Every structure is written in structure tokens, then in C-alpha cells.
Length: 440
Image 1 (cartoon, rainbow, N blue to C red):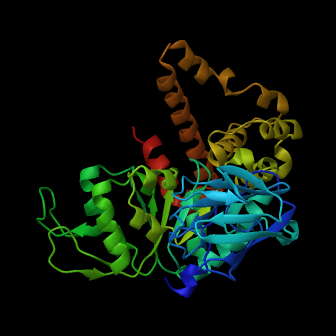
Image 2 (image 1 turned 180 degrees about the vertical axis):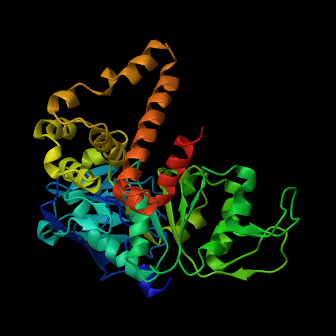
């Protein structure tokens, strides 16, 4: 692995209270004696320790497992967890599976010994930025990743973006593209869940005319379409296991071969992969290839759920309201307070839709907001039809999205790009909603 790649951290975010201290782990015995690693809150929520290439604290000791243990900053110290290692994790002479370190301990992993030291105040090293491109948030959980994202964007490496549905993975991927050296090139999105399994290989790599029934013309795949730019492979965790080695080969060789073709085509593409799945668990369960995981996780960022982003709900709500042409004061304080107490299972996407509904439907007071959309004639009509819950809910969502698309397009003179930007979602997703809600 190149020096550039090895210095890019594979990051997950801390979603608990901010740590007060940084800690240094100094190797005092073993093949890596003298190595010093500082855990200061700018890395992962869960930093991996072991021999494997996915480990940020990587050890050469052959008695250490590929994923031996994990480290996590917590208030007052560091949590260390053994990851079912072969030779165990020891604090002093005691074998531990899950322990809290306060500094001064001696760790033993295989034949390697590490001294744990306090290394100063971590809170002073947090970023003061409140946005990275179109990714917005003033919470500590978000501010911590902005410097990392800037470094990743400039480094032009493969990135894995993880997070629950609705956390904004595609928006972050676009921001990384727009803030990086390929900003003038295309940004192409391929969603592994939106294409029938039988067509995924053709969509990825293209096909020649006559390669299979229905192939009436030669077609470029998304790798060729993204040449000179960035390819986002969305929901990569859902990619069929049989196709994963073909994707790995394309990534490693920077070339593709169309179905039915007899020559390899060189492509210059930066790949960003996104997933809602826990790929570490998928690899352990043999549902995702270990070698492909290492290839896509050169840089790694996990977006926290909205419920863990303390203070971001009012910031985002006002931001979305402003993007929709409303003033910040259009959202009553009592409504924002109620929203702050909500768990937001749909994350940022659900909050954006709630703000859009409030703005688009003309609710101008807390009283009207407190009487939700269930009081409207339309929803009453759906309820009275005695449909199954899911069917009725889909009708309501479809109607809301239809009204919303019409409203935001009208507000921006029919300009799809501006309407999508104002909606806070990717243009591809906006077009998908628009086409679906305007059928018939």
C-alpha cells in the first residue's frame, strides 16, 4: 500500500459524549517496538488493532490476529474489546474481553506489549466548521469528520461511506467528489439494489451489441460513464457474492471488459462505495469478500444517525427551510423543540421531508403543526378506505411527494437542478421521485 493510502484513516464516528483526553499506545516489546499511536478523537469510533490491512493500528506480530481488538474513546478513558482473537487480549496479567483503560496500563496482544499513556486534551482538536460541501451539521459528531473528509477528498483514494438509511451517504459522496481533484469530471451513481441481479454485470461493465438477448446496441457501463470522474457504488453490501471478484478485478486493474467483448478498456475512475450494512460483520459471515472490503475501505467514514447528532435537528431544520425559500423564523420554537425530542428513524431524510411538508402545505402556526397531516381531508379519506397500514401509508407518501415536487419545481421555475439542490437531495433521487409521482 502506498504512503498516501496508508496515512488515510478508516474512520467511524464517536456518537457518545465527547472524550476529555487523548491516549497514546506505545509498543514497548514486540516486532513494532517504538511505534507510537495516538487515539485523539479524530479517528474512528472503533479503531481496529491487528495484522489486517483494515486495521488502523497495524502490528507485524504474527501472534496477533488480523482483527485482534478494538479501541474506542469514551468519557474518562478508552474502551478495549477483544474481537475473538486467537491468543487473547491482556491488561497486565488478566485476559479481558471488554475493559476500560484510564492510562498507565500495560496491554499484551500476542507477543506485543503496549503501554497506555494519557496524551492531553482531545476536545481542543475538534473542528469549528459546520459544513462540508452540502453536508451540514454543527454537532461535535459531525464537526469531527469534516477535516477527515477534506483530507479524503484531496487524496483521491477509494472511500467507504457507512451509515443508516437516510443519513446522507450519497450527499457526502457528492461533496467528496465536488471538493476533490475530479470535480470537473462526471459523478455517476450505481445503486446495487435498484437493478435486477441478472443485469448488474452489464450495468457495471457494459455490453457489446448482440452479447445477449435484448442487447440491440453496444452500451457503456457505469465505469466507462464515470471515466475521469467519480463512481458511487451505492449499497455495495447488497452486491451478489458471485460478482464481487469481478468488481475487485476492475478496481485493482483500472480496466473493464464489456459482456461479449474481447478487449479490456482502461478506465480512470475514483470509486466511492456506500452501504447501510455492517461490512465487518458481513465479512465475518462470509457474505462479503475480505479482499474487496480491504480494497474499498482505504478511507472509511461512518455517518452517525440523526438521533446521535446533538443539537443538529434545529440547525438542519432551519437550513432546509431556508433552502425551500422560507425564513428561519418560519419554524416555531415549540415545533423545533418537539422535533429535537423525536428519534428520527428515517434520519436526515425524514427531517427534510418534515420541514418540506410544513413549508409546502402552508402551515403557518404551531397549532396547525401540532395538528398533523392526519387532519387533512386527503388522509381522512385514505383512513376511511380501511386499507392495510402499508398500502395506506404508501398512498399518503406518494401524495405528499407529488405535492412537494410540484411546489419546489414551481419555486425554482421548473429547473430540476436548482429544485434538487433546494430539496437537499441528490439530483438523481429527485428525478426518481419526480418520474414516479408524475406517472398518470
